[in-house]
Image (cartoon, rainbow, N blue to C red):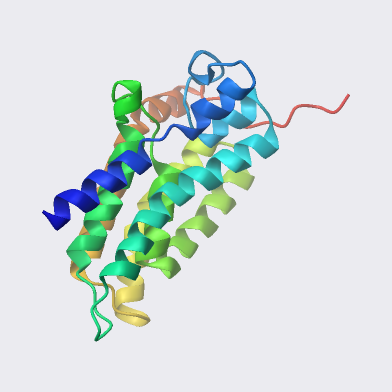
Length: 208
C-alpha cells in the first residue's frame, strides 16, 4: 500500500502542467503555438525567457520533491531508506509529467522532471549530464540535441561514479538506463528533424 500511495502522490504532482498554466495566464494555449510542447523551451519561445525559466524550475521540482520527501519521511532511524521507495517516487513524477491525467495523458518529454529526480537520487551524475547539456547547447543551439546527449550521459556518468567515486545502488543505475532510453525515445521526432535539418534552433529574439 505504501508503494501505491507514493506512486499515486508523485504521479499527481508530476502531472501538474505548469507550462500550460503559465500560458493560460497570458491567454495562450502553448500546445497550439511554437513546437506545441508544454515544456520550458516552448514557454520561452511563446511567453518569454523568465517565464520559461520559471516553468523549468517548477517542472524540476516536480521530480525532486517527491523523491526528497520520500527519503526525508521514510528514512529509518539508522539512516537507511529503501531504494525501491525512492525509485517509485521518481517513476511516478516522471510518468505524471509525460502522461498527465489532467491532459488526457498527453504531456511533455520529461527531461526537466527527470533531472529533478536524478538530483535527489545521484546528484553528481546529474551534474555531469548537466555540463554536457550546456556544452552541446552552446555549440549547437539545439535544445533537443542537448537533452538527448544529457539523457544518454546520465547513466554513463552514474556508472563511472559507481566505480571511481561514490557507490550508486544497482537499482538506481538500472533506473537511470531506463529513463535515458525513454527520454531518447520521446525525442524520436526531434531526431528525425535533426537528421533532415528541419529542427528548430533556440534563438533569442533580436532586441528592438
